[in-house]
Length: 87
Image (cartoon, helix red, strand yellow):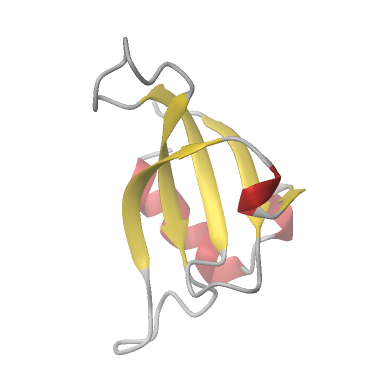
C-alpha cells in the first residue's frame, strides 16, 4: 500500500493539490534523494474537460503551498486520490 507523506494546497495553480507519497522517485534515487512521487490534482478532478490528475515528482517545501490534512481535501478529490494510489 502506498502511504501519503504530505498534502499541500496551492490554489494559484490548476494542479492545486500535491499529494506527496512516501515512495522515492524512480528518476534516479542516488542523484535525487529528496524527490518523492507525487500525485498532482486539480480541485475539479471529475470534470471531463477541466479535470486534472497526473503522477509527477516533487520535493517537499513551501513552493507546493500550505500543508493540509487528507480530510481537508474536497470529497471528490479524496475519492480520486484513494483510487489512484491504491490506498
